[in-house]
Amino acid sequence: MLMITRGGIIPGGMLAEAMGLTHILTAAVDFPSEIESDRPLMAWPTFIQFPSDVLLTGRLTLIVDDIWGSGRTITAVKNRVASAGGIPETCVLHFNPYRNLFGKLKPDYYAEITSAHIVYPWEIDRGPDVALSGQEQG
Image 1 (cartoon, helix red, strand yellow):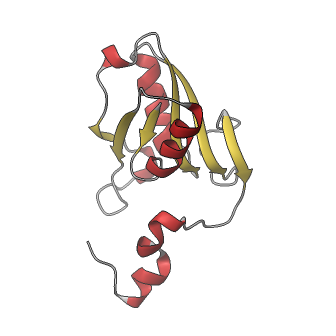
Image 2 (cartoon, one colour):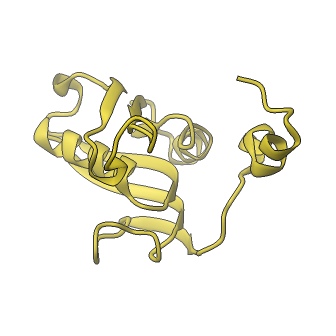
């Protein structure tokens, strides 16, 4: 299993426990913001943390995140796993086909389709209400 930080840590941990998985890896990906790039949707990601190819080659790898919105992050991770010789499958809690930038491509596994803005319990202190109230801490 490859959990995408930060959103995939909690659902990935729950899945790993339920499935009895012990080979658990993490990936951290960053995309430039609108301020950093004049075409942010076309920007290449920066892989801040990613497992070495030897840990992925020839392995079926379940890539876990909380949501597939635009699909940029999980697709970047999926492509990197495939290029390392791994066999990627994607899993999210929520899939938003209305924001998806990848046509008919969708997660291999998902719990629900939604167009709602989701704030998960583990990110409640980062939600829009906190940012609006000025109480958000870096």
